[in-house]
Image 1: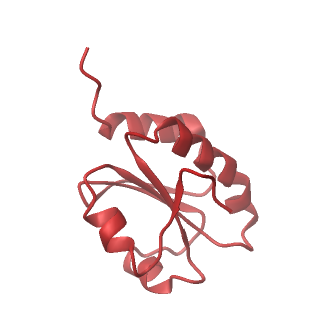
Image 2: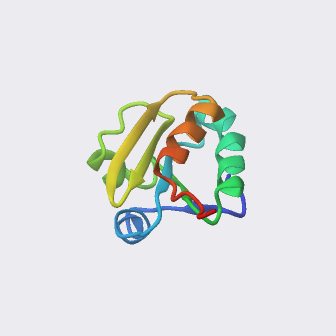
Image 3: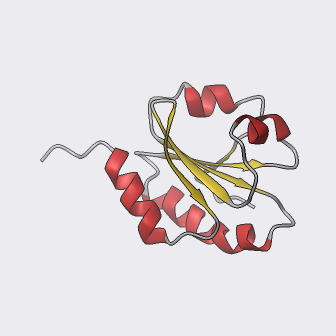
Length: 114
């Protein structure tokens, strides 16, 4: 359930891929059985494609990666967290519009030099 530019993030690689990364990271906490998560998936994939050189986009299956889900107090899914420099920059719970995600991403993405 992930596109070409969407990373599969697990308990094992979360530290390396998200917290230690140099790029902002948008992390979708989801589960296969979650209807709203499946509805949000195309938006997450579009963002991964649009921001592929500037932002990492990944998905954490909360059923398979409970330690990470518990560490970030994921009590409802979908929950999407934007990390910047290893810190939480923004948290979204529930279905969120692409426009809201883009505004948050644009606020942390390095602006290209003109």
